[in-house]
Amino acid sequence: MRAWHATHMKTLLVVLLLLALPSLAMAAQSRAKDIARVEAYLSSLTTIEADFTQIAPDGSISTGRFYLKRPGKMRWEYALPSQVLLISDGEDIVYFDGELAQVNYLSLDDTLAAFLTRPDIRLEGEATALLDFESGNGVIRASLAQKGREKEGVLTLEFTDSPLTLRQLTMRDAAGNLTSIQLQGAEYGVALRDTLFIFRDPRGVIPRQSR
Image 1 (spheres, rainbow, N blue to C red):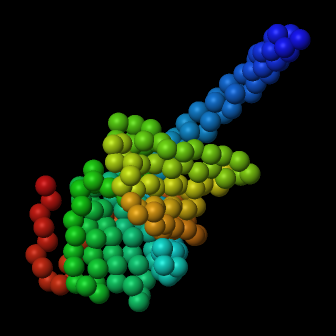
Image 2 (cartoon, one colour; image 1 turned 120 degrees about the vertical axis):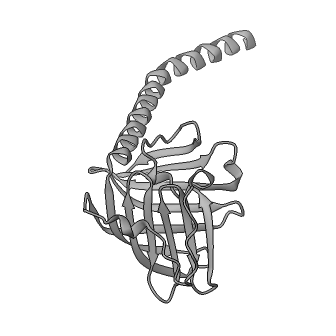
């Protein structure tokens, strides 16, 4: 009796597995198709100009204006009372904190912050690891990290579907703190002058020469 029961259960499991295979294959195909759509959408972007609202880990809210000019260039201009300005000129990212009167320079290769500025965007590539990808209920989310540095931080891009549109970025740092940025009133393909992406130090310091 036990032998018959064991054989019957194995047969049932095989049947269930065979029934599930087509669904798993379809899910994998759908995921690959959505990933390709997101990559094609992001790579097709030329410029973006949008308002943004940022929610910091402590719950504080900042607003400002976001500019993107691909490849290489972006500008996050925070509204007062914040005195923060972040600019990418295609080679470096400049972070200016007016309250502290400090300027920091980062290489584009050292941070995920400039992911959207890359000329050919791949969610899974030589430098980027795709940690999670989900779609459903009209929303698509992709979570990325730098390969080999997954514990240092994760960037999650959130899109509305139909039409595919970037609406939110969420950053999780090494300590698990979350910062979310929502884009509002975005305009695409607008003319943006290159001077937006040149940092002029308000302290009167001579600018650092580009490499």
